[in-house]
Length: 121
Image (cartoon, rainbow, N blue to C red):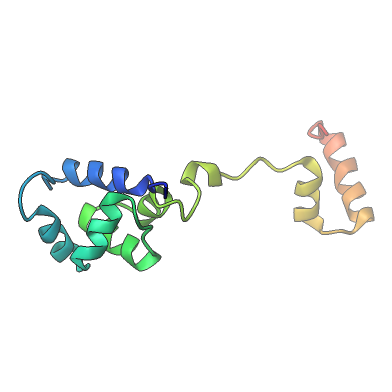
């Protein structure tokens, strides 16, 4: 038995929030027209039998009025934007960013920072 993709549930929920009553006749067809997608792909997506490609995600985001990255994440194509937050740099990474791999230049910067009371490795 094939497992359904969670994108279908997410899309159904989002459509409901945006005024698409999926229990009403013709709603899927109206959404498909609004998104300029085939009715069959919309049906497969809502059933969880398909994962949208990037082009389909762009079309869905346009109709929902949200960022494409939100739809791409829901489809499992990219990680959540919060997961992409940069981590703080280490002191060594800061040094390399300032003066490159030159060890003598790095030591000179460390001496200067220590003199200023700003070096805390």
